[in-house]
Each structure stands twice: as structure tokens, then as C-alpha cells.
Length: 99
Picture 1 (cartoon, rainbow, N blue to C red):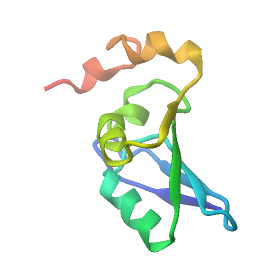
Picture 2 (tube, rainbow, N blue to C red):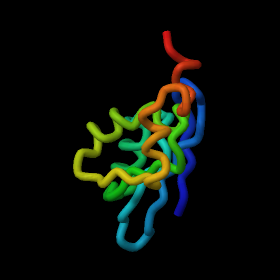
Picture 3 (cartoon, rainbow, N blue to C red):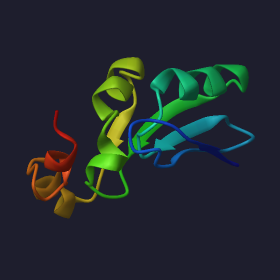
């Protein structure tokens, strides 16, 4: 099952993907408030096992620290090629959103 969530500074999509039998789940990309995802997971008895980034742009990773705090047992995953993007404000375009 796939649940689409919206929100956050960039209003990019966040997805919860889960197995309806085991209730194991992953959250993909992190733009909406983690409490929205946590509420959905709790209401549906989901076990968040993974936090997955599809790519390193700011609009997909902006709430990752909050998600890691909210789901501390979940494994965070991204393709290794995204490492340089995640750590470079110009490459991940976060400099465009700096205050």
C-alpha cells in the first residue's frame, strides 16, 4: 500500500509504503511534518523500518533530521551517489531557501 502525504516548506510529496500483512513500512522523502506520518503509522499499526531518500535535493530531505529523531530505530537509506549532494548546499539547492 502507498499513502501520499503533503506538506512542508516546499510542499513536496512524502510517501509511506507498507506491507498490509506484516505492517512493515518505509517512509520515502521527507517534506511533511513527521507527526503527520507518525499519526498515520500509529492509526494503521505500521512499523517504520526505513527512511528512504530518492535523491538529495533539499525539498526531499528538509525534514530528515526530524524524522530520524521521531523514528530513531528506522534505518536511513539513500543511493551512495547522493552523499555529495546531501552535504553540498549548492548541489542540494538549500541555499535558495536559506533565511
